[in-house]
Amino acid sequence: MRDAYHEELDSIGDGLVDMARLVGSAMGRATTAMLDSDLNLAESVIAADEKVDDLQRDLESRAIQLLARQQPVATDLRIVVTSLRMSADLERAGDLAEHVAKVTRLRFPESPVPVDLQATLLEMGQLAQRLMAKAAEVIVTKDIDQALQLEQDDDAMDLLHRTLFQHLMDDRWKHGIETAVDVTLLGRYYERFADHAVSVARRVVYLVTGEHADELDAAGAHGDGTAPVEGA
Amino acid sequence: MRDAYHEELDSIGDGLVDMARLVGSAMGRATTAMLDSDLNLAESVIAADEKVDDLQRDLESRAIQLLARQQPVATDLRIVVTSLRMSADLERAGDLAEHVAKVTRLRFPESPVPVDLQATLLEMGQLAQRLMAKAAEVIVTKDIDQALQLEQDDDAMDLLHRTLFQHLMDDRWKHGIETAVDVTLLGRYYERFADHAVSVARRVVYLVTGEHADELDAAGAHGDGTAPVEGA
Image (cartoon, rainbow over all chains, first blue to last red; front, side, top):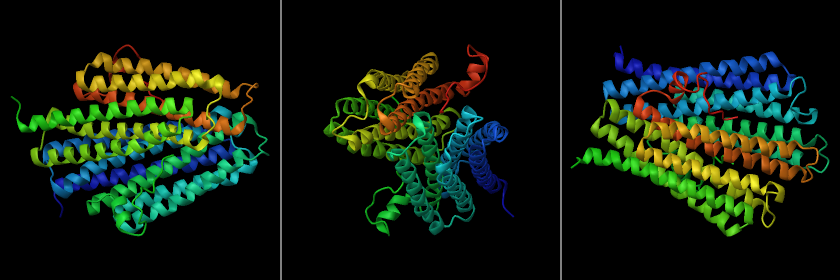
C-alpha cells in the first residue's frame, strides 16, 4: 500500500493525464467545428476551456501544498516541479484549441478554411490530437523511447505546416487576404499545439533521466545537438 | 546581513531581471533589424537567444537546488515556484524576439514590412520593449499598482494589433499574400511578447498578495472578473 504522500503525487500525475485528454479532445472538436462551420460545437470548445484552466489551478495549488508540507527531495522534487511545467504546457495547448474555435466563430456561417486546404488542416488537426494522446500515454508509461518518438512525429506537423505555406504563397491563391490571415494563424495554432505535446514528452524524459531531451539527442541519433523543437 | 539562503533567493530575482533586460533589448534590436533590413543585427539577435536559454536553465537548476536544500515554506516557497514560471515566460519572450529576427533574415535583402506599416510595427516594437522594461522594474519594486498598470498598457498593444489587421483586411491592400502572411505572424509575435511581459507582472502580484491578478481585478476596478490577457 502506498502512503498518502505518494498517493497525492500519483494523483497529480492523474490530473496531468486528465488535462492532456481534455485538450486533445478540445483540439479534435475544434477541428471538426472549423471544417463543418459548426457554431455550437465551436462555442462548446470555447466554454470547455475553463475546465482546463480550473484543472491547472487545482494542480498548481496541490503541487505547491505538497512542496510545503512534504518537502520532497531528489526524484520526488523533480516530479513536482516538472508537473508544474507540464500543466503550463497543457493549459497553453488548451488555449490554442480555443483559438481555433474562435476563428470558426468569427467567420461563421462561412468556413475559415477554403475547400482545397481542408484536407491539410484536417490532417494537422488529427496529428495534433494524436500527438497529445501520445503525450498523455507517455505521462503514464514514462517510456523514454516513446517520448523521444514524439519529436519525430512532430516532423510530420512541420511538413504539413510547410505544405500550408506553399498553398498560401502559390501565385494561384485566389482566396484573398482575409482567408490567408486566418489560415496563417490556424497553421500556427496547430504547430504550437504540437510543440506543447512534444514539450510534455521532453519533460517526461527529464523526469526519468534527469537530462534534457536535447542532451540525449546530442549523444544519440540526432547528433547535432540542436533542439528539434522549433517554435517558429 | 542576509544569510546565504536569502542571498541565493535574491540572486534568483536578479537573474530574472537580467533575463527581462536581455529579452527586452533583443526585441528592440529585432525591431530595428526588421525595419532597416539589417541582416547582421538580425543574426546577432538570433545568436544571442542562446544566452537567454542558458540563463533560464541556470535559474531553473538553482531554484530546484534551493527547494531541495533549504525546503522553503510559505512566502519563500511561493517566490521560488513563481520564479520558475517567470523564467519560462521570459525564455518564451526571447524566442519571439528571435522569431522576428528570423522573418527579417528570411526576407533579406527585402524588408518583410511594407513602408505604410512600418510606423505601426515600430510602435508595437517600442511598446513591447517598454512593457518588458516595466516588467523588469516590477520584479525589483514588487509594486502591485505598477504591476496591474501593465495590463492597461497592454490594451495599447491590442489596439495596435487591431490597426495592423485593419490594414491587412483593407481592400486597397496591395502587398500580396507573402507580405500579408509575414505581417500576420509578426503582429502575433509582438502581441504574445507583450502577453508574457504582462504575465510576469501578474505573477509578481501573486507573489506579493497570494492572489491571482484577475481575482484582484474582479474585486476592484475591472469588475467583470474576466482575464484581461487574451492570447488570441
